[in-house]
Amino acid sequence: MHVYLDYNATTPVAPAVLDAMLPFFRENFGNAGSVHTPGQRARAAVDDARDAVAALIGAKPSEIVFTSGGTEADNLAIYGSVAASSKPRKHVIASAIDHHAVLHTCEDLARNGVDVTFVPVRHGSEGRVGQGIVDPEDVHRALRPRTVLITVMHANNELGTIQPIEEISRIAREAGVLFHCDAVQSAGKIPVDVSRLGVDLLSISAHKFCGPKGVGALYVRSGVSIVPRCRGGHAERDRRPGTENVPGIVGIGKAAELARVKLTDDSGRIAALRDRLEGALLEQVSNAFVNGDPTQRVPNTSNITFRAAGGEAMLIALDLQGIACSTGAACSSGSTEPSHVLLAAGLSHDDARSSLRFSLGRATTASEIDYAIATVPAVVEKIRALSPRSAAVSVPSR
Image 1 (cartoon, rainbow, N blue to C red):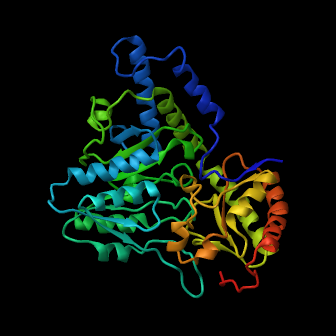
Image 2 (cartoon, helix red, strand yellow):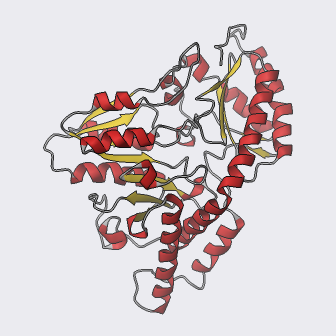
Image 3 (tube, rainbow, N blue to C red):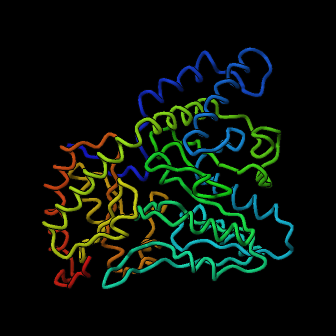
């Protein structure tokens, strides 16, 4: 049996999405920037997709900028807003558990004269570890007169924890500072409304909610200025030049439409499967515990530490049994370093290296979860038996 439990890395393209895209590779192949009939047909499809993406996040269509994915959207938001600021010396605030698309961009800004503060996350209380939530007061304390941008992700890609975006946005608004939110792991899983969240910029990626890879979007609130990262034309209202990826944009539009319709049913069903998997593994495997807040998280994600069992070894052994999961973010695959997210959330290096992320999706079935429940405990015990480290350690109370 083959069981895919790595939906936070990527999702299968929904059949309806593929069906919507195919004509724009073939008969409707026109350039959306052309004025003739084929071009107008492509332009109309892009406009329809823009409407659908805007509806998914409660934005105006004119506030949507199509990009090549979440990473480009993050880069455009951060570089573009910092470059647009007139302050001579600039300061940016980011969270310690953000995606590398944000962290590496901020680190690059720091190398080029921008001051950057990385705020920590809560380690938990009363014996709990790995809560992984930003304290808004830490953001408030990090503010300076020259702060130009705050960037905090909505849902963490490894823990699934949902950050207090509304509280942070109020802090940003009162300080007159722009606020960017990476919503790549929340859009399509939980309700995302840019007005309610109070953000100025927000990034999403199609392949996280059953759309195609290579296309995403950046919400830019009306009145917010960003400097484009590329030059070469007037596409996307002068914010992202280049020929539009019409098939991909049609795909993200259809995926956004489906996500709006299926959101409530999907989230409830997936959360129940996630909880069943999580509960069974904690019951059957000793010295195991869940990382992240147990309630403030997206419905599909479970990050579990299996003490004294190497994550990479478990990953390979489970793959041989037909189960695909992960040890962290897909973009960090191959790194020998433990997850920066788990370390920031308070785990030791050993525990961080002994953790697996199970992320479910729209196509996950009860029989697949049953197979995982029957397979994972034996794999963990086998890896522990081969490990020089002892599993006889106490586990923090949850």
